[in-house]
Amino acid sequence: MLLIFLLISLVFIAGLIYNQKSKRKICAICAGVSLTWLLLFILYKTGVYKDTVLLSLLMGQSITGLYYFGLKRLPKPLRIFTLPFFLSLTAIFYLLITEKFVLAAFGLLTALWVMAWLIFIYRKDPGKKPLAQAVTNCCEDP
Image 1 (tube, rainbow, N blue to C red):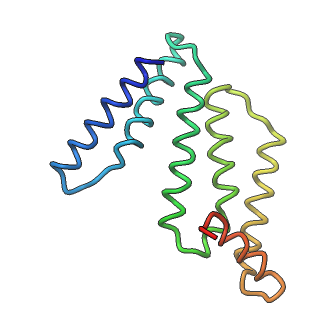
Image 2 (image 1 turned 180 degrees about the horizontal axis):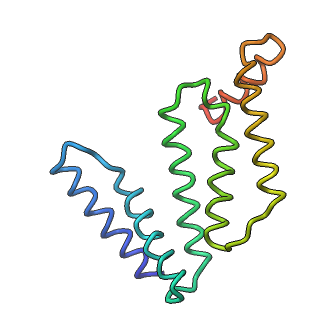
């Protein structure tokens, strides 16, 4: 674990240096975590690395980072899709690690995407508006 933390720290510092020298900015912590788990994932798939707990934690951090990245940049009406998006990322990363396709989970995801799409289409309908607003206002400061 120490070597992994060291690698994340080194990539983080490299990201900060890159940001000082470049017009294009990156999230240094996101780069550190993402590049580290990508390397660990390759090593895991080749049988060199065995710790799926730490690999999963790092992947989960990237899922959360992608979620908040999208949340900050999406127009508010599109936030209706945040739950299916977040759970889809989780399912994809689960599939990557375990190579297990859980049909019921993917069925639920499909249903969530369809429900989110229906809420999005009817978001201005007086009967659906409170639900649409509750979903789009999720994760905002109270």
